[in-house]
Image 1 (cartoon, rainbow, N blue to C red):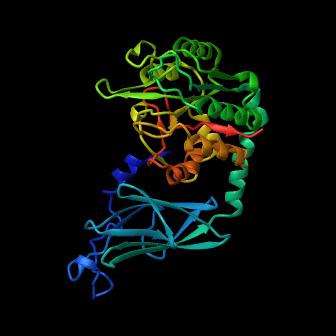
Image 2: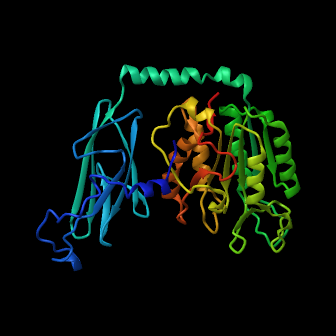
Length: 388
């Protein structure tokens, strides 16, 4: 079951060994700048994932990497949070990192340090689960979700929209959205089970053309089919109306008549009777489309189980007021799809595989978002990319 960032934050109030009262620093002689002789409290660490009862405990993991999520707080003096010598990434006071695992056991040490030199250490051992039973269960999952059986009834459709040329001179033309859209269309049809005749590519469409495409898909798709929707181009967020819009090629700067709203988009996504629908938006596109704003996930529960449950999800390049024309988001999205070696890849895995890379290589603090689309029929499943 997917765990959202807000749900993780709700868990912080639960009792935990690591929700401890701050202890005094190990060093009795503090002489760091203005903190000399004053700050003797170590950072407070609440380990959210994995669940560890006490230092030295062992936890099991089926994947080759383990995701660590912790809440770390200090008296405004936090300096670093490291895991096995690697810097973590954070959103607010939530810190996360993935640690690669050895074939047997991997010791993990999480160290939170403040500017006065006070530290809090948490250590545990991760055992990579390679038991015969676990291997048999995973093999059975893969066999149950056989691509040949699946392909007999289900089809993968894609609606790819790229807009970089606008009729209204007041709307700035772009250089890359059409090219980016084309690169995604190619990797889907060449490497994944999206047949070329089922990939609809709209280059600089009008609002009417976009609506006609959605109407066509609504009439064509069945409850066993899957749909990926991609948009690259200008996006607008109207604060007064609390509504986001895509700007088709015939959009005018001062007239919303030809803008395509996220409420229209939500209605179409909810009305198309597909098994799974995934929206990928590379534009200034508000989080208002989401039921949730972030998704943190451990190892997926199994491809078959995720596929059986209906999903309506969205992945966006960020909630910024403007998104750069040269997209870091689409660059790493396509790269991840191209380099993927797994037969099955969930959209959650795709997102988690690019989120930190996009953040680390964005010049303007771009933070991708991922989550369920509210009020469209999501049942906590996941969109599955299948390699040819």
